[in-house]
Amino acid sequence: MTARPRARRVVAGVAVTLVVAFGALACSEPETGRHDVRLPAKDRSRMVMPTDAFVETETGNRDYARDLAIGTCMKAAGQKWSVAPRTVRPDGNASWNSVTRLIFTPETARTFGYHQQIGEGGLDQRKIDELFRQPRLDRAGEKAWTACAERADRRLGLDKPISHFATKLAAEAYARARADHGVVAAAGRWADCMAPLGIADLGSDPADMPTPSLRAMFGLDADAPPTEKASADEIRIATADAGCQESSGYAKAIYDTEWDIQAKLVEKYADRLVKIRARLDAQHRRIHSYLEQRGVIRAAPSITREADTPAQTSGLP
Image (cartoon, rainbow, N blue to C red):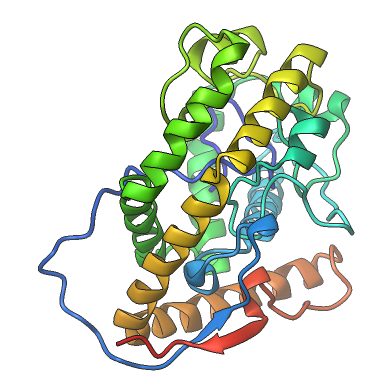
C-alpha cells in the first residue's frame, strides 16, 4: 500500500523482496478440496511458480490508483501531496516478475549487480530523488491524509483485505526448499565457488547475498532512493555470485524443489485459492475502471499474469 505520510515515500511499482516472515503454515490447517487446477509452464528465467496465479499482481496499478485518489482528496482539502506520474515499461521488468519475486541471473547481475531495474513507474532518477525528499506533512496534513486514504480504500475496494494465503503457501514452500538436502548440498558447492573472492562475511546460503558488508559497500540500504546504477566492483561480485549459483547447481535445485512443493500445496488448497483469485480479479477490474475514468489507461486491460499460460493440469496423488 502507499507509504504513510511520515515515512519515506515508496515509488509506485518499485517492488520489494518476498519476505518469508509469515512462518510455516499450521500443520492442523484443514484441506479445502481436491479441485484440479492448471499449473503454469515452468520458467526459471522469470521465477514462475504454481502459486503465482493466486497472489496480488496489480500492486503497481493498485498503488497508483490509490495515490491518485488520495491526491485528489488532499487537493480538495487544501493540502499539497505529490503523486508520481507512472507509465508501464513495455518490455516488463528484468529484476522482478509479475508477483514481485526477485529475478537474479547472470544477465541481471551483469547489468544491475545487486541493484534492480526500477519497476513500473517510468520515472527517471531525478524524479525519484524528488519524491524521496518530499516534505513531511504537519499534523493537519497527516489528519487529512489519513481521512483521504480511508476514502480511497473504500472507493477502490481496498478496505476489505483479501487473504494472503497464497503468499503464505509460497513462503512455506521456500523455507522447506532451502532446508532440502539436495539444495543444502548445492549451496555448499556455491560457497566453495565463491571462496576465492575473499568476502569476509560470506555465509553458506546464496539467499543471504549480498552480505551486510557488501550491502554497506554498495549502498544498498533500504532508506536509499532506488537506483539501477551499480559500481564495477558490485557487478564483478554479483556476476560471480550468479555464475556460482548456476555452476554449483543451486539455482536449478532451489527452483525445482520449491516448484514441486508449491504444486502439492496448490492442489491441496485449490478450492480456497480459486475463491481468492476470483476476489482479486474483481478488485483488479475495479482499479482498472478507476484508472480508465482518470484517463490513465484507455481501456481496462485484461487481467494477466506470467502464470496464466497453462501447461499442465495438476493431478498429484
